[in-house]
Picture 1 (cartoon, rainbow, N blue to C red):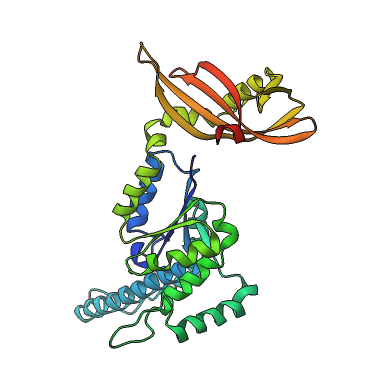
Picture 2: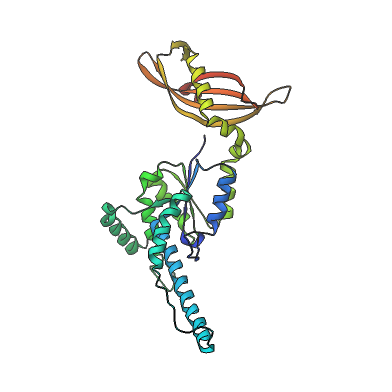
Amino acid sequence: MIYRTLIIFDTNRVRHTDYVGFKIGGDYDVIREFIKNNNLGELIHIALPEFVLEEIKKQKLEQYEKDIAEFGKIMGKFEKLGVVTGKNEIKFDIEKYLDNQIGKYLEDQNLKLIKIPKSKYETILESIIQRAISKKLPFKRNDRHSDMGFKDVLIWETVLNSRGLILDYDNIFYCSGDNGFNECKEEFEKIINRNFEQFNEGGYLMERLEGIYFDLIRNVRIYQFVRTEYFKEILEQKIEGQHWVEVDGEDKEIDGYEIIEVCNQIVRKESGDAGELWFEITSQLLIKIDGVEKDFFALTIVNDTNEVISFEIEDISGSQE
């Protein structure tokens, strides 16, 4: 199985105050480099809750105001010395500038934005109120405060109400320096039916990704090959060359087919005596038999030079017994 992963970042893992252009930093840079270097951009996507994006923008605006104030002090010293005379102030709308940069940055980086649908505002507000009353995670309680974590709750509700986006992925990883989101794992998986894990640091997240995608990273060449039109054409030719398939011990004639997934698994193998490297590529098919469509696997074995060694079609129900 080739898994698709969505990584959601909290503000504290992507802090970036530089306002020249718009960027995020921190763990995002580490993870993005990992994805790029291992050619995993089609399988691993990164998302930011809208609230996180607004917080990063606020950090940049605050830094800009600090720098303007500092710049004014320096100019005042120069005026007293006669180095410069008068104040040549340039009016610059930093907020408008950043707003213009944000959209371009999200597109260039292929970042997904998780927004709260306006149609769900009332429902989400009610849910936040109920969480606050019952002190339900990610609201936190300690000796001094009984309602810490409002920002975390807002992000959490945004994520829970983005089911349409999240269902495209198998694993949802949340990277945040705030502890406690893993304690929400059961709620997430019950509502959305997807695996959820929180990571406090990008390094731990990267180790997890290396484990999930170990075979693809190791076999990057063959993974690139199976995504080509050339391999799809080979697969089609092999399927069309088979007129019969075995179902429950009987040969059945193929009336038609559809390729559901060109590749959903790659298994690295070594052939017997010569030690030649082989790869078993599993494709998912829908084959029509006697007017009824049925799920099948196509197993294509190729060698290290992309030459097809063998091909067979296998009944999925039979393979699972």
